[in-house]
Image (cartoon, rainbow, N blue to C red; front, side, top):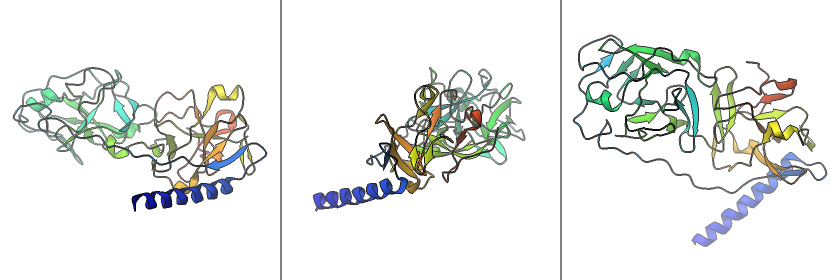
Length: 319
């Protein structure tokens, strides 16, 4: 029975591929659309001995925007500086400080109003991030940054209203050892939500502060289309030296899409035989000038390159 279901599934996938191929059309040797096979994804598991990531008894008090009692001043770490978004294979874009250290949120805190419920021994394991000097990169709205006054009088950075912390057991840039600790600690996404909830698929929707909801690749990098390309009939205007700056995006697994209708995603074949992702039958690229998720430095370049909206249309707004 299992093998019969598998053969039936393969037959269905073949029919879908033929339909997509017909949808985009072709011109000469410039091939038509196809799709890649589905693969399974694995979600990260929780870890830690309690809510605070160590064997202690819990927090020594609470902190809030309105003051109150509890806990001695937490050992303040360095300011966050210019924040960044770092692509993570499992979590999607993760907020880091200027040194590349992951920032976290605590489920027992609140965002409306902002309030921290981690102090005392909890704040030793999860040092609050000072708000002084923090600034937002392209992928984080300036309005998302704020601060909350802790019970010890210090000002803690908030992102989307959520107090931000580092994890004492993270020792190197890129570490995410705090993710999932106690089931209550999670890496921060650009808007203050849990990064794991915004897991990046092969193609995802990203809310860019200046352009709105745009499509990004599996690393969270902005996807662009080129006005000198064409979907009907299929042709490619970016070739040779152009490809040194604008990189064709690899085909996507249609089972790993986030927020975009699978019918918009196809694969086209370039004249040199390279297979490339297409959105609404338009080939898409990343820009080498973009360095982190949320960057849109390619938007409007030479009046011909544009980000792609979640419905597959080009975004003409300028930053």
